[in-house]
Image (cartoon, rainbow, N blue to C red; front, side, top):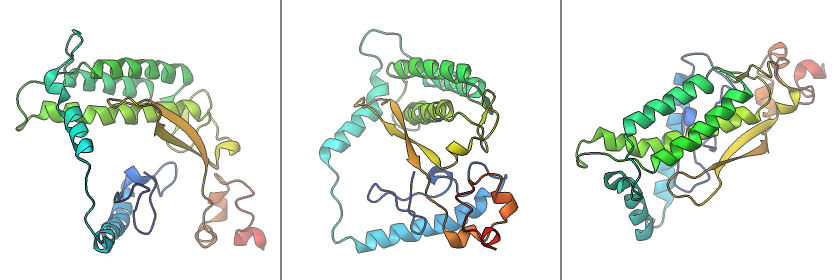
Length: 245
């Protein structure tokens, strides 16, 4: 989720985010434990930003009744099960199959044929998701909660797999066995995932390229030139004090 670094505000009005869901301030990888400082600093900023946003409202936003009804219909659909006569799918079975797919085919070491296979399996899981059925009632029903969460799991998994296929290099925590080196042409390119169709159950995902926002000069100067040279392009480092001198 792209956010303003000072307030945590996303482009969607009223949405504030902090932590690893809002991108990585540590770049393409981070050391274990470093996210704690990220959470403390930007969690506070997002909280203050949300409070300021609410205080500045002249009136409380009104939620569309149609939007509420559509969300309720989507959330309650697993209780009805498939309407086409297909075999009902258990959410726990779907989750296990999704975990196995991502762990085995889009794990730490990636290559095109395995990621392609994963995308095919994700498409199958998306269709199976539409036949999911849960038992019991709404009260204290973890199977139902999982059924709701699985939609987001499928969306995120497709984002990860398609971005891994698109980025034909290795960088940070993304390692392509068939492209083992960093490619300078990818350094300033971000891959952005968006819903690409009107499927209200599990929409497809499209990948677009966007330019990386240049690092501010005052922040660039805080970092050691030898470390930056491992990742940044010569053009990006042209104004670093070590280069200017």
